[in-house]
Every structure is written in C-alpha cells, then in structure tokens.
Image (tube, rainbow, N blue to C red):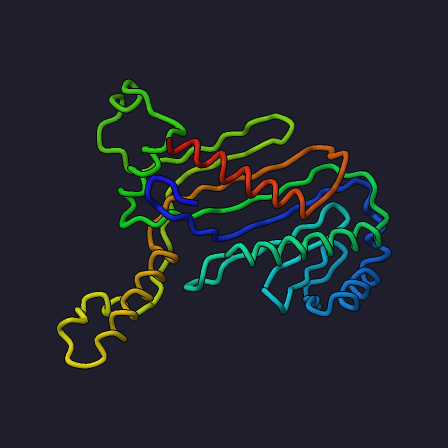
Length: 261
C-alpha cells in the first residue's frame, strides 16, 4: 500500500475472538494445549505463564503469539526490530494459523456463542523527522484543524493524534499519530555517506550495500506516521477467521487509499 508517495510497512497484526460461556477453559486448558501441540507441533506453551487466567503459546515457525482464556483467544504477529516488514506470504501463513487454532480451541471448549470478532493492523510510513510525520498526516484527507482552533494557541503544530470509530455492518476504529522509536537500530548508517564511485575496488558490492541499508532504514524508521486500523463485528452470526482477516486487509487498503486522494 502506497499513500502520498510513501510505502506502508506492515508492522503488526492481531486477531481476536471473544466468546461467552467459556469457563470450561478452567477444566480443559491442559487438554486443549495437548491437542493443539499434538496436531500442530509448531506451537510450544510458555509453561511458566500458563494459569487459570490465560494460556500463552508461541509458534516456533514464525514467532506468532497465541493466548486463550475463558473470555477470548487472540493471535499476534509482529515484525522483528531491524527486520523485514510482514509480507503477503507472512500474512497468508498467519491467517492459516488463526483459522486452525481458532477451530481447534472453539471445538475443545465447546464454544458456540461469540461476542466479538476483530482484526487489527499497524502500518508505518517512514519519515525523516517528527515534523515531517505531522505534515504528512495533516496532508491526508482524514481530518483537519479549524483556523480558529489553530490560532487560539500560539506556536507551531508539533504533534497530532486522532482516533475515530465508525459503526456499520463491520465496525472500524482508525487511529492516526506520529511515532518515534526509542533507540536507533544499528544498521551501519555510515555506509550511506560513502560513494561507490570514489572507491577503487568492489564498487558494485558497496553500491548494493548502500541500497540494502537504505531499505532497512525505510523499513525500520526512527520517525514514522502510524495508521492503526481495527475492524470488528459484534455478535457475529458466523465465525470464519481466515476469511475475516483477508476481507479486512482488503478493506484497509481500499479505505486508506481514499484518504490520500
């Protein structure tokens, strides 16, 4: 997804399914974990954290984190700091994991009454500075500040943040704000100041290294505009996790594109 000349970096996704009458979790937590790890060996429980309140597991395949309890189940997947953003193939594998684990857990716990299904995604848009992030967000056709509001306070606009909820057949919560990483990722930024044409040897190698480092900086920016979109349905008549994730991602891209026109 590209908005206003900036490529989106998919940083994190979360699927959540809330249910009613899930107290059989207290009786079947261990049995459910055994069934899950037996059928899908990629999952390993965090034995030190399993409790009557929650059962966390981690996928050895892609670091996806699964939690389930008497109230809900959720699965989250996040890009590694300094690593590659989540790709389409990552999302496909994640959707398959959500589908498989949701079906198994709902069967094991005998769940039939669902309160809420939701899918949330965080998109980063790399910026050179916090000021650029503010300017970029204000350039979206998502919100505006009245002249009266702006002029009522002295000084330059330094930070913006907005969150809105739209109710419909599918509900959406959209939040926009600027973010700054707590620390720079050590990616050898000094290589960006070296011109390959000035080096007597391995010029092509250094040139490609420059491109690689630039790409990593774009994917792991110190400053960024953040778009946080959450799609959810209350009392869903049908629970189809994989389909809900796919549909939501398509809607996120389509609706976000309309904000930049």
